[in-house]
Structure formats: C-alpha cells, structure tokens
Image 1: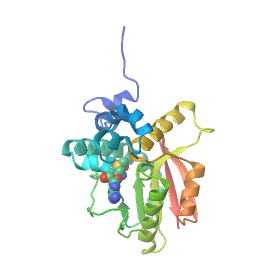
Image 2: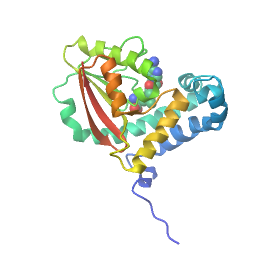
Image 3: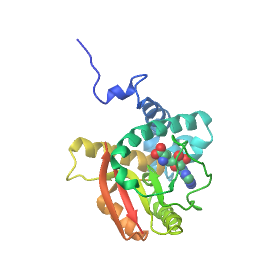
Length: 232
Ligand SMILES: C[S@@+](CC[C@H](N)C(=O)[O-])C[C@H]1O[C@@H](n2cnc3c(N)ncnc32)[C@H](O)[C@@H]1O
C-alpha cells in the first residue's frame, strides 16, 4: 500500500511555508477541542461556554492564565494569517488608497506593526480602515454590535473609511455540502467555546444594518472565509 499527501495535508509538512501545523496543534486540539469533552455538562448547565464548564473561566481568561496555551493559540492565529495574507495579495483593490489600518484583536501580528494595547469594547484607535479578522465570530450579536460601533467611531474620526471583516459567511444553497459542513463545524466551535457564531448573509446584513452601516459588499476570499467591506 502506498500513501501520498493530499494538497491540504502538504501544509502540515515541516519546512513548508505557509504552514498550518500550529493551527492544528494550538487551536483545534490543545485548547478548544479539549473542552468538547464538557459539551454535555455545558448543554445542560448555565455556563455560557464549554471553557467555563471545562476550566471554570471564559475562553480569553483561560488563555490569559496559561502562557503555554496562549502561545500555542497565538501561533495558530499567526499561521492562519500567513495563509490569509497570501489570499489578500489578490485583493489589493480592497486596500487601495488607504493610508492607515488598525488590525483589531490582531493577536501577535505578523508584519511591520505598532502595537496599541486595550480592549476593543472600550475604544479603537482611529484609522482609514479597521480590520476585524476572525473577531466577530467569537461574539454574539450584542457584543459584535458593540465592537462594530467602536469601529464606526474609529473610522468616522478620519472621515470616509470602512471596516473590513474577514470571517465565514454561511451560504447553504450556493456552497458545496462539504464547505457548509466546515462552516457549521466552526459554528458549533464558536457557539460552545465562545458563545459566538458563524453567520449567514442575512445575519451579517442584519448585524451591519443594526450597527448603522449603510452598505456592505461580500466577496469570497479563500477557503471558507469571505471578505466583507462595510461602509458607515
Ligand atoms: C480568533 S483570534 C483572531 C486573531 C487575529 N485577528 C487573527 O486572525 O490572527 C481573536 C483575538 O481577539 C482578541 N481579543 C479578545 N478580546 C479582546 C478585546 N476585548 N479587545 C481586543 N482584542 C480582544 C484575542 O486576544 C485574540 O487575539
């Protein structure tokens, strides 16, 4: 019998860039899928997230209290950003003419950046563009709206501007079944681990309209993620 790598498993081979090994080790195994063992308790109990059922604290406190877990989570996010950066090279028009960008909840970052500490629920530094990559799916609509309102304020100080959201958009009718399955798996992970959710096109529209954005555009980006440009 002979074995060969599939196109996606090549991204797990040592030395190959971009490399998604940290994503598998840090995000899907050690931190969050472990709390799936507590799904039954979470489902029957009052805890908002499985991390509360498993570790007694919410997901961000769980990571904040354990440097090793935080490190592996940040490495996972950075490896995902390598892939997304490649895809963004084909979306240059999205960033054309913009002078400043704030990457909210940017993790450790993987480019030339200045870091500004603080909570996105308090305030967001002003810029032409606010980028929310894999942020809003961590939050329910009420909290997502608070973040979006702060983003709107951050870009309105500069005049013009937009918010760029990189997240999944569930499109059951258009997508292949396997693609919908991936998005729904993430939906379950977001719901159980973060009290968040993946959203359909309609749900994104409702959220953005409620947060006061006048129009938005959605385009597929890469894999199961889309890019959403929202204008106040
Ligand atoms: C799923 S990660 C995405 C990280 C990064 N945007 C990326 O895609 O690689 C969510 C990020 O939100 C950050 N975060 C959570 N609560 C936050 C808050 N109140 N203010 C700012 N960032 C926060 C976390 O620390 C984490 O880095």
